[in-house]
Amino acid sequence: MTEIKVLEVALVQRLKRNHSSLGSRPVTGMSGRPFNKTNIKEHKMTVMFTRIGTPHAGHQQDALVYAKKRCEAVNQVYALHAQVYARFGGPAGQVVMLETFENMAALEKLKMATMDPANNAKIPAAPEGVFQSVEEHIWIKL
Image (cartoon, rainbow, N blue to C red; front, side, top):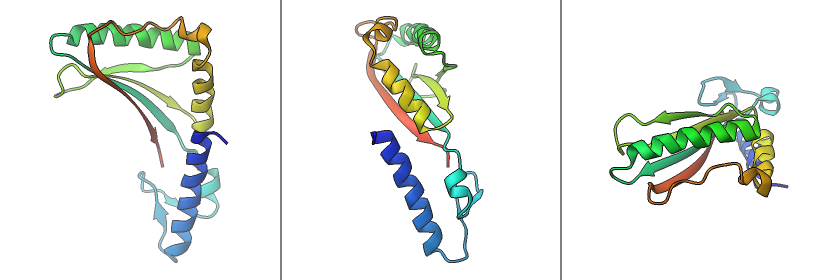
C-alpha cells in the first residue's frame, strides 16, 4: 500500500474509532458536518497540494515569475488546474502553487507521473539563488 493510501485508511479508522467512543455525540469534520457510520466511508477527502517558496531578499519578483512559469508547465504536462498565489504580509514575496484533487488516489496518480524523467524534463527548474526554502504540504478536507 502506498504512503498516501495508508494515511487515508488511518484517517478513516480514526474517524470511526472517535465516533464509537463518543456515544451519541456526533464527530464533526472541520466543516462542522457530522460524520456517522454511513458517511464516513462515503465522505470524499478532497486533497489540496501546496508548494510554497520563500525567496531570498531582493528576489521576490524572480520568485513570482518562476512560480507562474512552473505552474503553466505543470498544468500543461499533467493536465492540472494549479494556480499561483502571493502571500499577503510576511515573509515578503512568498509564493504558493496550489492544486486541489478529488481524493488521495488522484494525488498518488500525479506522484507516479512526476517520476517519469520525460515529464520532469518539461518542468523548469528554479533559478539558482532565488529561493531560500521550498516546502510541499498536503492538506485533507475533512
